[in-house]
Length: 391
Length: 210
Image 1 (tube, chains in turn green, cyan):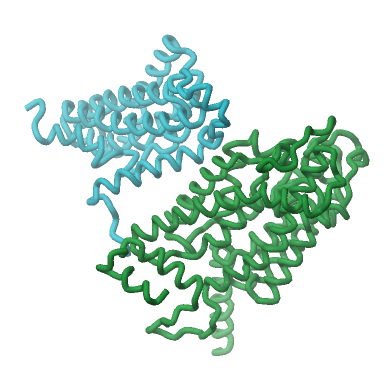
Image 2 (cartoon, rainbow over the protein chains, first blue to last red):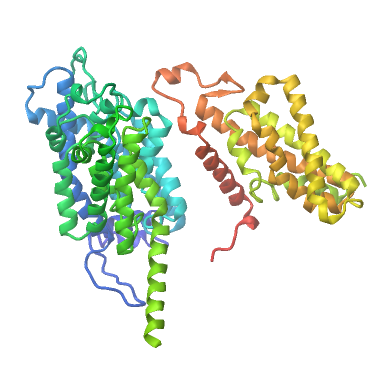
């Protein structure tokens, strides 16, 4: 690799691809240059290593997502007895195109933009690229995913200055774009379970009366004084064997990822725990005033946390260090409000069965304000202390 | 005399270099609201051109007699009278479009472009340049409205002037209209894209990077 290096430098024949080369080199090897000015904290964990750890934390979700995609498909065509390995391979084949599209489109734009501005390629898309297939319903047509990814990378990231400068979470912007642009494909009973075959595998006709609605989707359209008729199973939701966006269903896989993020110290435990705290508090409040007008308010507060994208958003979206709050007290407020708003939207807005995405995006917008308030409050407090000490 | 250099500037500057929407960022509210499809956008554009041109001329005629302390009230009365005339004409001759535009014709009164031009130009200039300035600014506004509406209608509904332009075979192949284009946020993003292209082409408009 070092031998190739000179060809990419200014004047070399491949100078146009310099940022591509740089990107790959620093991705594979720790760079041997260090910052030359100012004081820096030494740590061999640079941004690329951080990103790689997040990807490792996402692997349980990814693997389970593949298995569950297969499982839901085989349930739909009435062959629930198929072996788990076949299901996994089916899910792998179903999800692979989405992953490829997301990376090709997103990285393509990043590479082009880096080359235009003669900058290094930023590594931020590594994580976004794997998050997108996990939060986009499996049945979304690939061109829609491509359009949404391009939109999100250009308008939510590049125009703000690239990795580390974005105000909103790029993966969630992708999903929000899809959600508002193509509502017919993104919600309802047919979005979350792949019914046709993947590369010729697992073909079959759909069983009569099969409904691929997610638990929250069923709850939202429920009519009647209670939810008994819905056949909801919180344990299944905890395991993850329910229809839903690929990565969000399994609480176990998400908790495993959360453990990896917390042990390596990459994600903020303050944000993570306060999102759950906010969700539980709002869940109890909603449950205390449960009415059939808002069916989701009849859900058990703890079950609220297992359904939908709440846990996934709490662990992988809210903890994004770029778009979240940075002060300690700010992180508590930020996380808590995400939890509260997610459940608030879920319960009281009939149009949106799930509110986690909107809650995180909304709080992304407020994170700088929260930080500003916390910092200025702190300054004021210390100034007052100084004054009283002087007297 | 009629088209001296100064008059030409009054007419042509607002079209691009000093565009009320792109450069002065005025009149954004109605740009978001009436650009879902081309037809209302064009009607809105014409209405604003008419109101702005005549308001400019009338205020310019009265510029020496208006006491400065109550000039805003006088301007508002003139604009309001013109807007009511436009509204009546629209209701009489194209009822459907006037329904679609609903309050936004009435809200021309509060359009910042109008007050801006009256204050900045009509009060200090003779009627003929004021007329040119009014038409120029109205056109500058209308052009942006039409461009935004073109993209929003094409991508959001697959139509132009309410006739289908995206062939049915596209839909059969899995294409679908972008619902976000119908919603106001996308109008803002389309306007932002136009500003982006505009500033990339006119380097002197770019702000200094601090």
